[in-house]
Amino acid sequence: MTPDTGPARAASPGAAPTIQPAAGPAAAPCGPICSHAIGTRLSKKLAMVTMLVLGLLSVASWFSIHSLVVERNGEDVARRCALIAGMLELQARNGGEPAVLAWLRHDAAMRGDTRLQVWRADGSVLHADAMPSAMVQSSHVRAHDFDVTAPALSGGRLAARLEVDYARDAAMGTRWMWVLALTTLGAGGVVAAASYFRVRRELRPLRELAAQAKAISPQRLDLRLALPDPAEELLPFIEQFNALMQRLERAYAQLEAFNADVAHELRTPLATLIGQTELALSRDRSAEALRDTLVSNLEETQRLTTMVNDMLFLAQADRGAAARRGAPVSLAGLAQQVVEFHEAALEDAGLALRIEGDVVVPVDEALFKRALSNLLGNAERYAEHGSTVVVRISAELAQGPEQVQVVVQNRGPSIAPAQLPRLFDRFFRGDESRCCPQEQHHGLGLAIVAAIARMHAGRTLAESAGGITRVGFTLATR
Image (cartoon, rainbow, N blue to C red; front, side, top):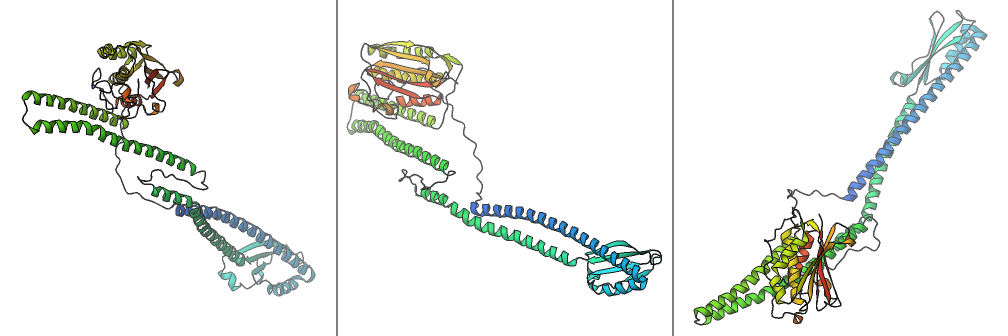
């Protein structure tokens, strides 16, 4: 078997193969794309997080300071009340009520932010400081009632109330609150500006990648993305994009080659049809001559039809068509049906055929028989006269029990190692001078075998050495 990939005949055994088109996603309505700047969005989020954290810290700091100030003010009021009580007791013991009144009037001038009121034991007012104007309008006055022991006075005691204005402390707390708030806002602004600048700087590689991608065109598919010092986060993107471009470049080259091959393959039969038709119309001809011309044109047309049908089949397979599997069936039984179809051609070529092994799996019977028919047709053309062609069916141990291997083996001229990788390419032919130069094959037979293998989640295989050539494919069991 050599790399002429054309089938032995236009038709394959069995019913026409069926193809299950791959289900594609439903078309989604296309709406407007709303873009945003990563640097701007990230800067805003960092600023918001910064202000939130600083705001929480500022609130906690403010309440902590407020609690400390309140505690300190309470201790201050208690200390002042204890000091006043001690002085009143001393003055009452030394000079009685006149001494107490004298000290209260003298000390009032030194209590600018306070107001002291003193009552006798019977509830009458002994002394009351004038209310400072600042205290009248203040809402931060704190009062503390206390008693004074005075045995020398009538009733033996005095009642007192000390009112202290803490408006200054409140004003300081308000200023501190504004400082914290402005610090929080300022820190958020600084973080936003700094992060925006830094993010734009760090996103410079993305802009470089975008510029490199923009430079790629159908004429420069060889270009690849590259950065002198790529970030770890960008490496997967660069590697996947370059791998995609590698596949795209290869597919584009194959498409160009395929278009050239199609044009070349169609040009010859079309030129033949045109030439024969022009020759038939150039002068009067007998009905028998015109009949021969029509028969020849019909053969060329049938060849064109076969080629077009094969290309349509390959196009459907390339779009992801899947095989329609039926119930589990004996592959050896299907192979026997194909052998019966090729029986006459095998006899003409002086070849014997043997089927070895069997596996029962669900497959698309028509596609399986078509692939095996193409392999047998290839073997018929290149096998040595009098040799035996072997169809071997087995579980592929190297790929696990879920793969089945179907191989057609024949003895004949070996295939050059350089040609083996291209054996299943479309329109690829080996050295046709070595066999069957009078036959015309359009070179899609083994390409169809590869497509059928892919439709069954399998692959192709080929090896040739020592005059023995093995070509086949694998099938997934499910």
